[in-house]
Image (cartoon, rainbow, N blue to C red):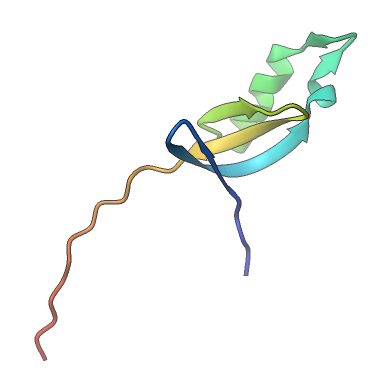
Amino acid sequence: MILKEIYFSSGKAYLILSKIPIYIFTKNDILNRDKLNLYKEWYRADHILKTDSHFMFVENIEDVEFEEMVLDY
């Protein structure tokens, strides 16, 4: 079974596709936004979230709508 991590922020839920350390995208303390966006496209992420140590490439989790089904046997 594959377990996926969910991250909650500002009342929204995100499925974490990947976490990559910030230093991968920086050189001499300058952020390489082109490289960051390439990774976003590669993972097909909706957003990039930043923690103190990592960038998280995430997918939105939309609210689930359902209706109750009654089965007659």
